[in-house]
Every structure is written in structure tokens, then in C-alpha cells.
View 1: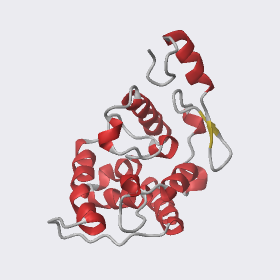
View 2: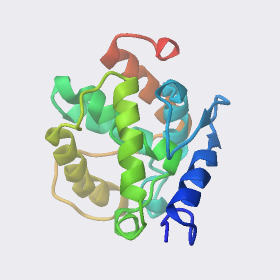
View 3: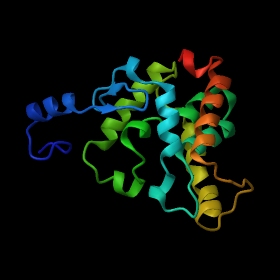
View 4: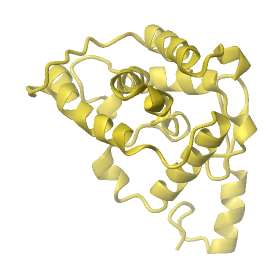
Length: 185
């Protein structure tokens, strides 16, 4: 049984995955199961992440994946900041699936890893994601829980941005980190 296509066999499942594409905000076609590096656009990533709410929407106020990503990029060492910004970029094409659910989704991690490899290649990031980014991302859970869901024990405070600001901040941070405007990415 193929975890993505239901009961189809591996050959039929591969064919179905090749036909599975989404149209992005900018009008591009992206195949999440077989992404072409040239089809990934920072504007699409920023726009989608600015509209995706963290924690499946289970927060007191809207809190976007884009804002979370900008904050992670500001907390990691400068040499890992671009990875911090883009560490959840696959969610622009797969959505933000809450971790406890994600663990039970057949082939999800494989698909997510494939997308992240394509993101890394597209934006000139080394592979794999630096451990510091993972560590800060996990540490953000405590801060986000305190500020968005309940009490925690870190000194940082998060004030959620609206989606337009999250998208703008994401693109601005991209320009700061990679030294070029998003339109040249």
C-alpha cells in the first residue's frame, strides 16, 4: 500500500505523485513529491507561510509560520540565519501539519525532506539543516506556548503580526540574509 495514494501499488503511486502539483500564489506549478528547484520562489514561500497559522490554529491569536521563521532566523548564529528563515519552507507547499499527527502520516517525512533538499539547493544552503536551527526551533516551542497558548519560562515575548506584515518581514529578512532582493531570487 502506498501511503500517499491509498491502495495503489508503487508504480501507480509514482505516476500519481508525478501528476500531483499545486498552483502557487505566483502561478507556478510545484510538484511537492518531485519538486523542480527552479519552480520554488521566495515570494510564494513568504506569502504562503504568512497565511499559515502555527499549531493548527490552536493559538489565542493568529501566529504565522512566516513570523516564527523570521524569529528563528534572528536567534541563531548569523551563519545559520538563512537556514533559520527557511527551515519551515516546505510548509508553503505541504501546510503546517502538527508534529503529533505528522508522525503517523505515511511518507510525509520523506516528502518534507525532499522539498527541503530542493529549498536548500534553490537558495544555496548547505545540507543538512544545522543542528542549531533545530535546537532554536524546538526552544521556540516554550516561548510560543507561553505567549500564545499558556505559561513558559523564557525571557522573549512574542507579539503576533498580521499576515501582510509577516510576509513583508519574511521577504525583508531574506534580502538581509542573502544580500539580494526577493525579486532576484
